[in-house]
Length: 378
Image (tube, rainbow, N blue to C red; front, side, top):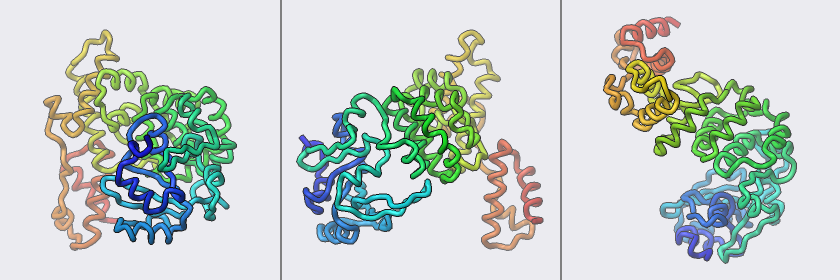
């Protein structure tokens, strides 16, 4: 059964390391236990040290990338699969963001440093499951449960707060949800230490979950993200929109919950995402302006229409026959024309004006030129 689950590329990596020296862990094991397919990103734990891992894999002509040698991790590109191989380790010291680790030969000690019981299961190539924390039982029951003490796990890495909600959004609300969140509360301020990129990534992953609305409602009611200035909104709209338009993309879900654009320092969105979110905002405004739904049953009609526009993303405005997709009007020549010499500063000024343009809801060329001149004086 295990060999049927493992893709041949992943089998090749494990066999190169030795069946007794390498086991799958994380998402691939969860998929195996639930009867799903092996994901494209695979985590493998091993007894070998990083340099030994590299030697053994390169002997088999596999491409090895030293992605995290300090923490014992290398990444192997095996066909369509990306396999992250990490040496067994123990956390010696943590600060809520990083950990100082030491390598070990003890599988059970390695399991004790992991976040949740469902992520602390190991699977070997023979199909034997190693589960010291009842992760299989928790996964079957839809329970996200920390390994060991909740406060200890959170203080080791504050990102685990977000991961707890993310996994709950995908698997189901734990029966002790409220109690666990209360235990995590002393660590909520520590979320400010996390990078905006990590926070944003976890929130997008949360929004993909089938129980996202329930989790977000809990987050809102219990003020979990207030310390970051993030308060989920319009959850009823999100629930209706996802039901009415199942293909609603994650950026559309983000728009409903967090709005068209935010300058919140704990959120990292690309310029492309910001532009798309602004388009969604324009599409929604047009729906209301044109009265495309009656006031009666407005919520469901509104959610369905907005969801459809959001799914179209960059075609949202075209879909509603409102306007062409807006493009940033300023060019490099405009910067040169005000006396700025060619060089790095040209791009810097363009970037600052484009950021302002997005925040100001896409003003015209003249307004952008005026703002450029103001910036250039400093």
